[in-house]
Length: 325
Image 1: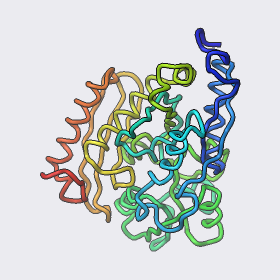
Image 2: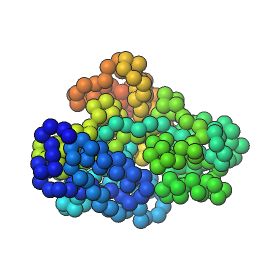
Image 3: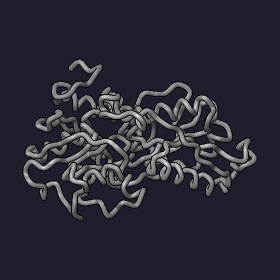
Image 4: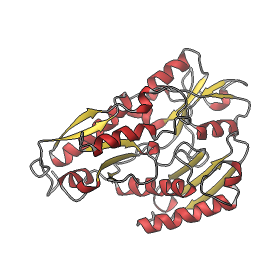
């Protein structure tokens, strides 16, 4: 048990963790709950919250992006229906949310995107001309078309198992998903091609989880209990990626790929902005050397990367609100 954090100090025998009801969300939340319990001895129970993204149909991009999943969780947290919530960080809007703070980013899962096809080890190059690929992400649409402009890319909704079923039923010839989600719910056998991060950067924060609490609880027992599962490197990298997205004012559903990969002095930071049809790309690349150690250092690096993207014409190929270059 971590010194100074115990069940008695938490003020209640149980912490309530708000989560969406999907298999992936509850699996991620249970990992966080178990980690907190193992580190502190405090019991954590899951409280299921229904979000607009779970009940509405249609394109996620048209509904306002993946942030639709976060709003209901955050409102439940502010109302006191739970003590903490867990988000997939790639789905979390970058703007601060009054009254809430990210208290921990646990160790990050794989960041990469993967292709799932009808047979094991299917690659994008294996698909025949005119094949249909499913994804709900404008970024992935652009990346698929950049590499294979002859393919058809169609929107797809539903949880991981629903998307895999639609592919197996022949509605799609292949689909693109996040590796982390597939591995978290043990669907590893569905993974075909794994896209390398330096050539196929993913969403800011992909593979990372964000544990959010009420700001007023940050210095109290809840904040201390949650903070023990924070992984500094995972947090620093994910926050750097999100800083670039925020400064671009692009939104988490925009055709922008941002990833930090590699270890130690070999860590590489890549940011790309895509035209929706994949025909044009603006890229910024950095070898980090050392991880930026402070918020100020991350902001400075992010601002430098964004300036390079804008100077390269990023605002000319995709709508970036707030930019004037």
